[in-house]
Length: 424
View 1 (cartoon, rainbow, N blue to C red):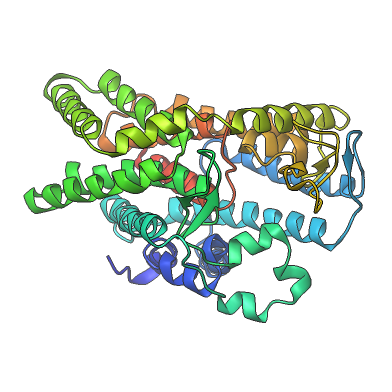
View 2 (view 1 turned 90 degrees about the vertical axis):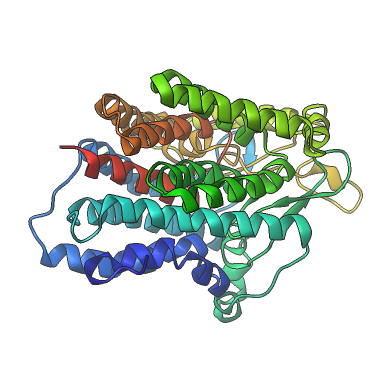
């Protein structure tokens, strides 16, 4: 699993991710590692680029242009240009550029330098880390500590809510999803929803690496680990994750044939039966009976679209705060109205984030990039091809409910690179 030679930055990113998380870098580690990747790429010129590369470049160019609107306040929102808005914009721009470097780096490594199977196993190792973090969030939800990065950053940066989520390691978010306070696992990622998105993508690659390409011992361990993963998956109370896993199973039934389809159906049926007989099924029923976030999402999504309509081409560069929320016209939390707060516009999914930060143009480029990957690789029926196309489909589903930044987008684009490297 330890990569030598030019593949070491990828191993450091995926296998070494728990260390980055503990240090306070987390998903920001890709920015750190993009520097040596860029140097190595420069020395290896000419650099190969994937199909769809131009769409990502346009997405980047649009985001750079959107900086012109950082000081603007669209109707229905409030807040002035300050350090927090500029820091958030700068970090997102650095992430988008770093992810581009990462994809080019992966695509320009030869099969000998980084075999596809080894890259898949690296993602499988991160799945094991994610399950461990999820279990930590279930059984020790109060676990948290101040990271070294958090200690050295000035308060005006470390105190920014977006930055704080990235640099302050916590095991879980405590929310009143069921009407009472309950923990939702998030370790080793930045948000509970990021954990949900990431565990589903990593599960797909874990199955490829440990079941499809694994021997008998790995397959037995895979069943055990997936069984353990079911605990935090249910306790995450994450409906988007549950829907994604259901659609993934349906996708496999449709896309595979013969004996493989029979195995998939048998495993799915056995898993469903085991789950129905377990105590976890009651928790899922409670979650479905408490769709408390629906009204919040409806408010922020509609407010996001209305605000973005005033700058439809380049957006506003960063998120904005809406006046009022789905219950009241009061703006923000107060000592006498703790329920008057609201999430920032664009915080309910990557699509809505792109619409407010980069306008409808940016959102269209993002969708076109991943749709293009599905179209080009649909005919690839190898295990990596099937898994990669499935992940691209989940990207388009999750963009409606999950923010892609920070770690989810890393995994989306590693999956994209796997598809690209799998092309003849």
